[in-house]
Length: 377
Ligand SMILES: *Cc1c(COP(=O)(O)O)cnc(C)c1O
Image (cartoon, rainbow, N blue to C red; front, side, top):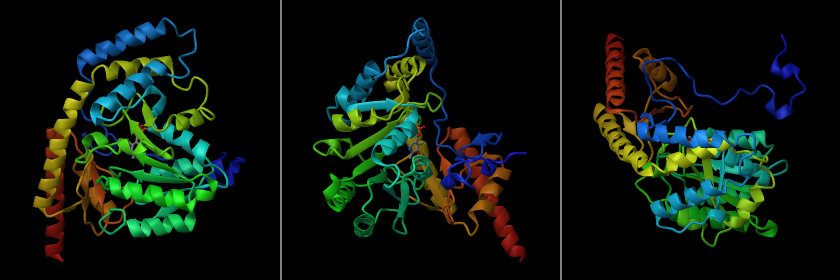
Protein backbone atom coordinates (compact mmCIF):
# COMPACT_ATOMS: atom_id res chain seq x y z
CA UNK A 1 0.00 0.00 0.00
CA UNK A 2 1.32 3.45 -0.92
CA UNK A 3 1.69 5.80 2.02
CA UNK A 4 1.74 9.61 1.83
CA UNK A 5 5.44 9.67 2.59
CA UNK A 6 6.13 7.37 -0.37
CA UNK A 7 4.85 10.14 -2.65
CA UNK A 8 7.10 12.96 -3.85
CA UNK A 9 5.42 15.47 -1.51
CA UNK A 10 7.04 18.64 -0.14
CA UNK A 11 9.50 17.90 2.66
CA UNK A 12 7.71 20.10 5.18
CA UNK A 13 4.55 17.98 4.81
CA UNK A 14 6.28 14.66 5.54
CA UNK A 15 5.08 12.88 8.67
CA UNK A 16 2.38 15.51 9.35
CA UNK A 17 -1.31 14.82 10.05
CA UNK A 18 -4.27 16.83 8.73
CA UNK A 19 -6.18 19.27 10.96
CA UNK A 20 -9.32 17.88 12.48
CA UNK A 21 -11.27 17.56 15.67
CA UNK A 22 -12.53 14.00 16.16
CA UNK A 23 -16.07 13.76 14.71
CA UNK A 24 -17.43 11.10 17.08
CA UNK A 25 -21.02 9.97 17.14
CA UNK A 26 -21.99 10.83 20.74
CA UNK A 27 -25.19 12.35 22.15
CA UNK A 28 -23.70 15.74 23.08
CA UNK A 29 -21.03 17.31 20.87
CA UNK A 30 -19.53 20.48 22.31
CA UNK A 31 -16.15 20.33 20.61
CA UNK A 32 -16.07 22.54 17.51
CA UNK A 33 -17.59 25.86 18.63
CA UNK A 34 -20.55 25.52 16.30
CA UNK A 35 -23.83 27.24 17.03
CA UNK A 36 -26.15 24.49 18.36
CA UNK A 37 -29.30 26.02 16.88
CA UNK A 38 -30.37 25.05 13.36
CA UNK A 39 -31.24 27.96 11.06
CA UNK A 40 -34.81 29.24 11.59
CA UNK A 41 -37.39 27.89 9.09
CA UNK A 42 -38.15 31.25 7.42
CA UNK A 43 -34.43 31.60 6.66
CA UNK A 44 -34.24 28.03 5.35
CA UNK A 45 -37.09 28.90 2.95
CA UNK A 46 -35.43 32.16 1.91
CA UNK A 47 -32.18 30.28 1.17
CA UNK A 48 -34.14 27.83 -1.00
CA UNK A 49 -35.67 30.76 -2.91
CA UNK A 50 -32.38 32.53 -3.50
CA UNK A 51 -30.56 29.30 -4.43
CA UNK A 52 -33.37 28.42 -6.85
CA UNK A 53 -32.90 31.78 -8.54
CA UNK A 54 -29.11 31.29 -8.63
CA UNK A 55 -29.62 27.81 -10.13
CA UNK A 56 -31.28 29.38 -13.19
CA UNK A 57 -27.92 30.95 -14.03
CA UNK A 58 -25.51 28.16 -13.11
CA UNK A 59 -24.49 27.84 -16.76
CA UNK A 60 -22.60 31.11 -16.16
CA UNK A 61 -19.66 31.78 -13.84
CA UNK A 62 -20.63 33.61 -10.63
CA UNK A 63 -19.87 37.27 -9.93
CA UNK A 64 -16.11 36.96 -9.60
CA UNK A 65 -15.90 39.90 -7.22
CA UNK A 66 -19.02 39.02 -5.20
CA UNK A 67 -19.98 42.69 -5.14
CA UNK A 68 -23.55 42.33 -3.83
CA UNK A 69 -22.40 40.04 -1.02
CA UNK A 70 -19.47 42.28 -0.07
CA UNK A 71 -21.83 45.25 0.00
CA UNK A 72 -24.18 43.44 2.40
CA UNK A 73 -21.25 42.34 4.59
CA UNK A 74 -20.00 45.94 4.68
CA UNK A 75 -23.51 47.01 5.72
CA UNK A 76 -23.55 44.38 8.48
CA UNK A 77 -20.18 45.57 9.80
CA UNK A 78 -21.28 49.20 9.67
CA UNK A 79 -24.55 48.50 11.51
CA UNK A 80 -23.01 46.34 14.24
CA UNK A 81 -19.85 48.34 14.94
CA UNK A 82 -21.05 51.87 14.18
CA UNK A 83 -17.94 52.26 12.06
CA UNK A 84 -18.59 52.96 8.36
CA UNK A 85 -17.21 50.23 6.08
CA UNK A 86 -17.42 50.30 2.28
CA UNK A 87 -17.70 47.46 -0.25
CA UNK A 88 -14.14 48.15 -1.40
CA UNK A 89 -12.87 47.44 2.15
CA UNK A 90 -14.44 43.96 2.29
CA UNK A 91 -13.38 40.68 0.72
CA UNK A 92 -15.11 37.29 1.05
CA UNK A 93 -14.03 33.67 0.55
CA UNK A 94 -14.93 30.07 1.43
CA UNK A 95 -14.62 30.37 5.20
CA UNK A 96 -12.24 32.67 6.99
CA UNK A 97 -9.69 29.89 6.61
CA UNK A 98 -9.59 30.64 2.89
CA UNK A 99 -9.36 34.37 3.65
CA UNK A 100 -6.35 33.65 5.88
CA UNK A 101 -4.83 31.40 3.23
CA UNK A 102 -5.17 34.13 0.60
CA UNK A 103 -3.56 36.61 3.00
CA UNK A 104 -0.58 34.30 3.56
CA UNK A 105 -0.30 33.58 -0.16
CA UNK A 106 -0.12 37.34 -0.69
CA UNK A 107 1.91 38.52 2.32
CA UNK A 108 3.70 35.34 3.43
CA UNK A 109 5.17 32.51 1.38
CA UNK A 110 8.65 31.01 1.00
CA UNK A 111 11.37 33.06 2.67
CA UNK A 112 8.83 34.92 4.79
CA UNK A 113 7.51 34.31 8.32
CA UNK A 114 4.31 34.66 10.32
CA UNK A 115 4.12 34.95 14.10
CA UNK A 116 1.21 34.03 16.39
CA UNK A 117 0.87 34.01 20.19
CA UNK A 118 0.29 30.44 21.31
CA UNK A 119 -1.81 28.69 22.42
CA UNK A 120 -4.07 30.06 19.71
CA UNK A 121 -6.02 28.89 16.67
CA UNK A 122 -3.90 26.05 15.30
CA UNK A 123 -4.99 26.75 11.70
CA UNK A 124 -2.84 29.90 11.66
CA UNK A 125 0.30 27.77 11.89
CA UNK A 126 -1.12 25.11 9.54
CA UNK A 127 -2.04 27.64 6.85
CA UNK A 128 1.46 29.10 7.23
CA UNK A 129 2.88 25.64 6.60
CA UNK A 130 0.58 25.04 3.62
CA UNK A 131 1.69 28.31 2.01
CA UNK A 132 5.40 27.75 2.69
CA UNK A 133 5.47 30.55 5.26
CA UNK A 134 7.82 30.08 8.23
CA UNK A 135 6.01 29.92 11.59
CA UNK A 136 7.14 31.58 14.80
CA UNK A 137 5.42 30.74 18.07
CA UNK A 138 5.15 33.92 20.16
CA UNK A 139 4.70 34.01 23.95
CA UNK A 140 1.68 34.40 26.23
CA UNK A 141 1.40 34.99 29.99
CA UNK A 142 0.43 32.22 32.45
CA UNK A 143 -3.17 33.52 32.34
CA UNK A 144 -3.08 33.32 28.50
CA UNK A 145 -3.17 37.10 27.96
CA UNK A 146 -0.58 38.64 25.64
CA UNK A 147 2.44 40.05 27.50
CA UNK A 148 2.99 43.24 25.51
CA UNK A 149 6.66 43.66 26.47
CA UNK A 150 7.50 40.02 25.61
CA UNK A 151 5.46 40.24 22.42
CA UNK A 152 7.28 43.40 21.32
CA UNK A 153 10.61 41.68 21.96
CA UNK A 154 9.59 38.63 19.92
CA UNK A 155 8.50 40.87 17.03
CA UNK A 156 11.72 42.90 17.17
CA UNK A 157 13.80 39.72 17.25
CA UNK A 158 12.04 37.76 14.48
CA UNK A 159 10.79 40.66 12.30
CA UNK A 160 7.80 38.63 11.00
CA UNK A 161 6.06 39.59 7.75
CA UNK A 162 2.67 38.68 9.23
CA UNK A 163 1.46 38.82 12.86
CA UNK A 164 -1.71 36.99 13.95
CA UNK A 165 -3.78 38.24 16.87
CA UNK A 166 -6.83 36.12 17.68
CA UNK A 167 -9.44 38.14 19.57
CA UNK A 168 -11.32 36.57 21.31
CA UNK A 169 -8.58 33.96 21.39
CA UNK A 170 -9.38 30.36 20.52
CA UNK A 171 -8.99 28.11 22.55
CA UNK A 172 -8.44 30.21 25.69
CA UNK A 173 -11.43 32.57 25.28
CA UNK A 174 -10.47 36.14 26.18
CA UNK A 175 -10.57 39.16 23.85
CA UNK A 176 -7.53 41.40 23.39
CA UNK A 177 -7.51 45.09 24.36
CA UNK A 178 -7.26 47.61 21.53
CA UNK A 179 -4.14 49.16 23.14
CA UNK A 180 -2.41 45.77 22.98
CA UNK A 181 -3.20 45.34 19.29
CA UNK A 182 -1.99 48.87 18.58
CA UNK A 183 1.26 48.24 20.45
CA UNK A 184 1.83 45.06 18.41
CA UNK A 185 0.97 46.87 15.19
CA UNK A 186 3.49 49.62 15.90
CA UNK A 187 6.15 47.09 16.88
CA UNK A 188 5.54 45.07 13.70
CA UNK A 189 5.75 48.18 11.49
CA UNK A 190 8.95 49.34 13.22
CA UNK A 191 10.58 45.92 12.89
CA UNK A 192 9.99 45.83 9.14
CA UNK A 193 10.11 49.54 8.33
CA UNK A 194 12.71 48.93 5.62
CA UNK A 195 10.29 46.69 3.69
CA UNK A 196 7.05 48.64 4.05
CA UNK A 197 5.96 47.18 7.39
CA UNK A 198 4.23 43.94 8.34
CA UNK A 199 0.64 42.73 8.01
CA UNK A 200 -1.27 42.39 11.30
CA UNK A 201 -4.24 40.05 11.04
CA UNK A 202 -6.84 40.26 13.80
CA UNK A 203 -8.94 37.08 13.72
CA UNK A 204 -12.35 38.07 15.11
CA UNK A 205 -14.15 34.78 14.45
CA UNK A 206 -15.93 35.03 17.83
CA UNK A 207 -16.29 38.78 18.26
CA UNK A 208 -20.12 38.73 18.25
CA UNK A 209 -19.91 36.89 21.60
CA UNK A 210 -17.44 39.33 23.18
CA UNK A 211 -17.77 41.75 26.09
CA UNK A 212 -15.40 44.06 24.22
CA UNK A 213 -16.31 45.99 21.07
CA UNK A 214 -14.89 44.91 17.71
CA UNK A 215 -11.38 46.10 16.82
CA UNK A 216 -12.68 47.02 13.36
CA UNK A 217 -12.16 50.82 13.77
CA UNK A 218 -8.40 50.13 14.04
CA UNK A 219 -8.20 49.47 10.28
CA UNK A 220 -8.76 53.21 9.67
CA UNK A 221 -5.49 54.84 8.62
CA UNK A 222 -3.60 51.53 9.07
CA UNK A 223 -3.24 49.89 5.66
CA UNK A 224 -1.35 46.92 7.16
CA UNK A 225 -4.16 46.02 9.60
CA UNK A 226 -6.66 43.33 8.54
CA UNK A 227 -9.69 42.11 10.41
CA UNK A 228 -11.00 38.64 9.62
CA UNK A 229 -14.55 37.44 10.33
CA UNK A 230 -16.69 34.39 9.67
CA UNK A 231 -20.33 33.32 9.37
CA UNK A 232 -19.39 29.93 10.90
CA UNK A 233 -19.92 30.85 14.56
CA UNK A 234 -22.32 33.65 15.51
CA UNK A 235 -24.35 33.27 12.31
CA UNK A 236 -24.71 29.56 12.95
CA UNK A 237 -23.73 28.78 9.37
CA UNK A 238 -20.56 26.68 9.63
CA UNK A 239 -21.82 24.50 6.78
CA UNK A 240 -22.07 27.50 4.45
CA UNK A 241 -18.31 28.18 4.39
CA UNK A 242 -18.27 31.96 4.28
CA UNK A 243 -15.57 34.13 5.78
CA UNK A 244 -14.61 37.71 5.06
CA UNK A 245 -12.12 40.42 5.86
CA UNK A 246 -12.21 44.16 6.33
CA UNK A 247 -9.12 46.23 5.54
CA UNK A 248 -7.79 49.02 3.40
CA UNK A 249 -9.06 48.67 -0.21
CA UNK A 250 -5.43 48.08 -1.28
CA UNK A 251 -5.38 44.83 0.75
CA UNK A 252 -8.55 43.73 -1.04
CA UNK A 253 -6.89 44.47 -4.38
CA UNK A 254 -3.76 42.60 -3.27
CA UNK A 255 -5.51 39.32 -2.35
CA UNK A 256 -7.10 39.30 -5.80
CA UNK A 257 -3.61 38.60 -7.15
CA UNK A 258 -3.76 35.10 -5.61
CA UNK A 259 -7.45 34.20 -5.36
CA UNK A 260 -8.68 31.59 -7.79
CA UNK A 261 -11.05 33.08 -10.36
CA UNK A 262 -14.71 32.47 -9.41
CA UNK A 263 -13.64 31.03 -6.03
CA UNK A 264 -17.00 31.81 -4.40
CA UNK A 265 -19.78 29.80 -6.03
CA UNK A 266 -23.08 31.41 -7.01
CA UNK A 267 -24.82 29.02 -4.58
CA UNK A 268 -22.59 30.17 -1.72
CA UNK A 269 -23.16 33.83 -2.56
CA UNK A 270 -26.94 33.33 -2.74
CA UNK A 271 -27.03 31.45 0.57
CA UNK A 272 -24.91 34.02 2.38
CA UNK A 273 -27.08 36.85 1.04
CA UNK A 274 -30.18 35.10 2.36
CA UNK A 275 -28.55 34.68 5.79
CA UNK A 276 -27.61 38.35 5.85
CA UNK A 277 -31.30 39.24 5.37
CA UNK A 278 -31.90 37.50 8.71
CA UNK A 279 -29.11 38.88 10.87
CA UNK A 280 -31.55 40.01 13.56
CA UNK A 281 -32.96 36.51 14.17
CA UNK A 282 -29.51 34.95 14.00
CA UNK A 283 -27.99 37.40 16.45
CA UNK A 284 -30.86 36.73 18.88
CA UNK A 285 -29.33 33.28 19.35
CA UNK A 286 -26.03 34.97 20.15
CA UNK A 287 -27.58 36.59 23.24
CA UNK A 288 -28.86 33.20 24.42
CA UNK A 289 -25.47 31.60 23.84
CA UNK A 290 -23.69 34.38 25.72
CA UNK A 291 -25.87 33.84 28.76
CA UNK A 292 -25.31 30.06 28.55
CA UNK A 293 -21.56 30.71 28.23
CA UNK A 294 -21.71 32.85 31.38
CA UNK A 295 -23.64 30.10 33.16
CA UNK A 296 -20.97 27.55 32.19
CA UNK A 297 -18.25 29.83 33.61
CA UNK A 298 -20.13 30.33 36.90
CA UNK A 299 -21.12 26.69 37.34
CA UNK A 300 -17.69 25.30 36.45
CA UNK A 301 -16.12 27.66 39.01
CA UNK A 302 -18.78 26.57 41.52
CA UNK A 303 -17.78 22.92 40.93
CA UNK A 304 -14.18 23.93 41.69
CA UNK A 305 -12.66 24.27 38.23
CA UNK A 306 -10.41 27.04 37.05
CA UNK A 307 -11.96 28.85 34.11
CA UNK A 308 -10.46 31.48 31.81
CA UNK A 309 -12.73 34.53 31.36
CA UNK A 310 -14.53 34.02 28.06
CA UNK A 311 -15.57 36.48 25.35
CA UNK A 312 -16.45 33.62 23.00
CA UNK A 313 -19.02 30.82 22.64
CA UNK A 314 -16.69 28.41 24.44
CA UNK A 315 -14.96 28.11 27.77
CA UNK A 316 -11.50 26.82 28.63
CA UNK A 317 -11.52 24.98 31.96
CA UNK A 318 -9.06 23.01 34.09
CA UNK A 319 -6.84 22.31 35.76
CA UNK A 320 -6.26 18.63 35.09
CA UNK A 321 -3.16 16.58 35.86
CA UNK A 322 -3.93 14.73 32.67
CA UNK A 323 -6.23 16.69 30.37
CA UNK A 324 -6.51 13.87 27.87
CA UNK A 325 -7.66 11.39 30.55
CA UNK A 326 -10.23 13.95 31.72
CA UNK A 327 -11.39 14.42 28.10
CA UNK A 328 -11.88 10.64 27.82
CA UNK A 329 -13.71 10.45 31.16
CA UNK A 330 -16.16 13.20 30.09
CA UNK A 331 -16.59 11.41 26.74
CA UNK A 332 -17.42 8.20 28.63
CA UNK A 333 -20.40 10.15 30.01
CA UNK A 334 -21.59 10.91 26.46
CA UNK A 335 -20.21 14.44 26.09
CA UNK A 336 -17.54 15.34 23.56
CA UNK A 337 -15.41 18.37 24.47
CA UNK A 338 -12.09 19.45 22.95
CA UNK A 339 -8.57 18.69 24.00
CA UNK A 340 -6.55 21.35 22.18
CA UNK A 341 -3.29 20.09 23.60
CA UNK A 342 -3.01 22.96 26.10
CA UNK A 343 -1.48 21.14 29.11
CA UNK A 344 -4.01 20.95 31.98
CA UNK A 345 -6.92 22.48 30.11
CA UNK A 346 -9.96 21.45 28.06
CA UNK A 347 -12.39 23.53 26.01
CA UNK A 348 -16.17 23.22 25.92
CA UNK A 349 -18.49 24.95 23.44
CA UNK A 350 -21.65 26.58 24.81
CA UNK A 351 -24.53 24.47 23.51
CA UNK A 352 -28.26 24.46 24.18
CA UNK A 353 -29.29 24.67 27.86
CA UNK A 354 -29.99 20.90 27.82
CA UNK A 355 -26.59 20.13 26.28
CA UNK A 356 -24.85 22.33 28.82
CA UNK A 357 -26.72 20.61 31.66
CA UNK A 358 -25.58 17.24 30.31
CA UNK A 359 -22.02 18.53 30.18
CA UNK A 360 -22.12 19.91 33.74
CA UNK A 361 -23.61 16.60 34.99
CA UNK A 362 -20.79 14.73 33.24
CA UNK A 363 -18.15 16.98 34.82
CA UNK A 364 -19.66 16.51 38.28
CA UNK A 365 -19.80 12.74 37.77
CA UNK A 366 -16.17 12.65 36.64
CA UNK A 367 -15.06 14.65 39.68
CA UNK A 368 -16.93 12.26 41.96
CA UNK A 369 -15.33 9.21 40.34
CA UNK A 370 -11.91 10.76 40.66
CA UNK A 371 -12.32 11.67 44.33
CA UNK A 372 -13.56 8.12 45.06
CA UNK A 373 -10.40 6.82 43.39
CA UNK A 374 -8.24 9.25 45.40
CA UNK A 375 -9.89 8.11 48.66
CA UNK A 376 -9.26 4.47 47.87
CA UNK A 377 -5.53 5.12 47.45
C1 LIG B 1 -13.72 28.70 13.82
C2 LIG B 1 -12.65 29.69 13.58
C3 LIG B 1 -12.52 30.28 12.34
C4 LIG B 1 -13.54 29.97 11.29
O1 LIG B 1 -13.08 29.40 10.20
P1 LIG B 1 -14.07 29.25 8.96
O2 LIG B 1 -13.15 28.82 7.91
O3 LIG B 1 -14.65 30.62 8.72
O4 LIG B 1 -15.11 28.25 9.34
C5 LIG B 1 -11.55 31.23 12.16
N1 LIG B 1 -10.73 31.59 13.15
C6 LIG B 1 -10.85 31.06 14.38
C7 LIG B 1 -9.98 31.53 15.47
C8 LIG B 1 -11.79 30.07 14.61
O5 LIG B 1 -11.88 29.50 15.81
